[in-house]
Image 1 (cartoon, rainbow, N blue to C red):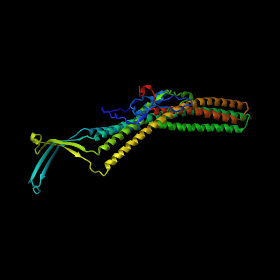
Image 2 (tube, helix red, strand yellow; image 1 turned 90 degrees about the vertical axis):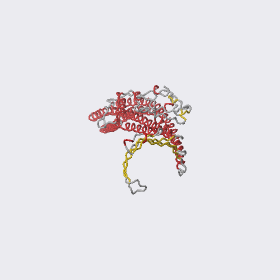
Image 3 (tube, rainbow, N blue to C red; image 1 turned 30 degrees about the vertical axis):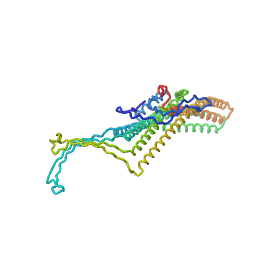
Image 4 (cartoon, one colour; image 1 turned 90 degrees about the horizontal axis):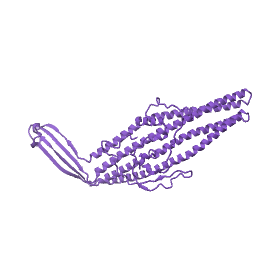
Length: 478
């Protein structure tokens, strides 16, 4: 999805020179059980931002129509996104202003004036009243011998490109936030469903214990324990409902709608929530990081700092201007445009800085230091990007193993709870054993649905770290 055009009115404001910074390329190997680091990522190459490549609807890999609808509504209505688009247009307009300095300035300054001269002034023209009509054209043009104007335009153009990259970075972050909040809410739905079923079980257990107590079997302590477990589970259900409302309100704000009118229908049961975990292919190319708008923004800020250094250096050299004026001047408007009323002037001017108190030298040093800062920030941004991808791959791998183990734990906990209930009905054990078994079963089932949501959120983080997914048709080499 490409909301923002790359250029306006035929102006290629994103065409900036690539920064001379080396970029690590290669591929992440397939993750094995005991290997969670990319041993050799390849070689370093020159940075080449590819954030302009469309990412498409990457969230569709999860196969959730509701999520797709929320993403669509967000791109249409989010107010911060609209503000970011306005900031990009401001930066592009600034670049066009800078480009305009490459061309001459031509002004028409027509005027009409009527004057009365005092006979007592020196020199005296007598008691005279005169009219003057002017229709000149004034021309001014700076001959850009040292590249000051040209480098200023390059810097403004790089700033516009950085602003566009910042917009796409915000868009990617916003889309990821929507997906993460949505899956967190659905995970809570599944957890609420689990707790609700447990409450129903607790109510039945309270009835069972009461009937056994009234029949003279066991004692009132079992009733207190059963009612305590019921009340605790109901309290957990209320806490989960509160958290769900908070996530629902957060989604409404991200989408740009009123929280009081926004509502997502809760899932009726855990079985209704069957999210699709995207399959991550082995050998993902590290070039995918070049699609990340955050990395592209840092590269263009580096290009901006480089251009500003050129502007600061040009301040040591003369400024050569060519000025001219031509038109008509007459005291009678009827003769204003006659041949004899014509005037003209033309001539160059040179401005050479001789003494500026060290300001130009200090400004040049500041520009060089800013460029070096931008280089280091760019390199650091790349390292952070690699670290985030490594974390994402490791999380996806380990959470998959954790989910398999958690499934076994849930099965065993359910079996334990069933056996404890049977042993209690047979009068073999006290109700305390039933409480412990049911509590363990509830905790393991809640941990299972929480883990399912965590896996989806980590997959989204990995997609974001890779600049919007790994779909082949959107890869740099496709």
